Image (cartoon, rainbow, N blue to C red; front, side, top):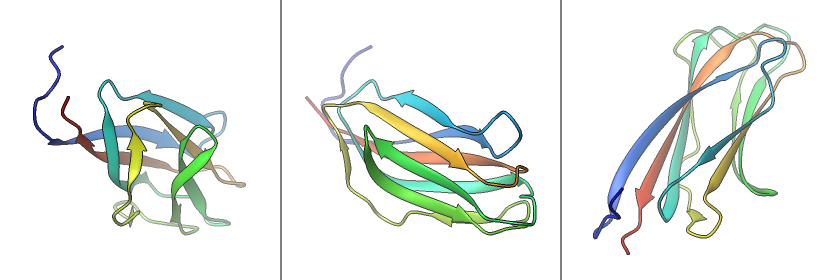
Length: 118
């Protein structure tokens, strides 16, 4: 793998769930010095209707962003972190944590990153 010599934008998408036995942490390793600049979440299976579902984005114990889908969020519902400045140049692991008291629903989470040059 060669290291980029200029800044490049990159988008990676990961499935995440609010279903029984599927909630919790997903750790994603970023192979380059990276800045996380935006996170988006899109519902691909409607959320159960009693409470909201959250996706928390962390670097270690530090929360970078939290996305919240409302109870009963329908297929296609989107949440966006807005522009953020998550520096992952040293610790290159992003942690995505899903949480919902009443289980039900699935999302796709997209990380928009800026790969930093050498």
